Length: 315
Image (cartoon, rainbow, N blue to C red; front, side, top):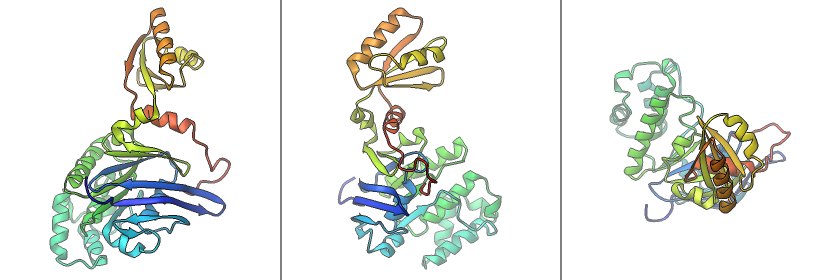
């Protein structure tokens, strides 16, 4: 990941009516990176992606995407970007091949049949090429959408919650393909709210209510937040959870299956509480590194909802 960044923007802002949907957003994405956008629905992720690829013009801010000005060279950006929307946006009454051929015509691509054949093979769609898009499952629609994004050999992929609503195997297959593309030098920016997907990203930005909360290499995010965490196992965790919320050093208690993850930013106070309660029993306390999900919950708890009391317009 060397050379100039693929995306470098500062202070991007966008309003819809009187609502500030994106508030002074900054991001720098290096070439070949898989960069994750994490945030709840309504946090502004889709609006940011649309500003980056030239579908929306920012009200304020500046920067470049693929070397082109995001506010004045939108048409140039669109030619070089593959954008996969949240909602399946291809023709359900056309076959897989017909959809891909239509997209190739839209981009005025040469060697159209050759490119479509390659896309069908690369995404495992060749044997289904005559099947109508409307009859496909969510996972196969996802493959078709990704194949269409890749036809014109984009340098940057912008994927807006691409695995929402698909089964776990389809999600794994999709991420295998994303890693393959990244290894070939394609830069990928993907929005998600699945933490098991976030850990596969090289970098992560947490977004809430139009604001960037924190960003950095994914492995470093929990340390940047400053959380310490203990895992607690044993009986009657519901009662313990209620009790823990008033204990020294405890700022967050989250249920993870058959255990609680107890976190805080005052490590000494949290450790003292953990050791005291562990000695009293009957629960087992184990220190563990804070993860991305604990960091996300902590950051979201302190974020202010700029749409409180109003209808949301940003995804």
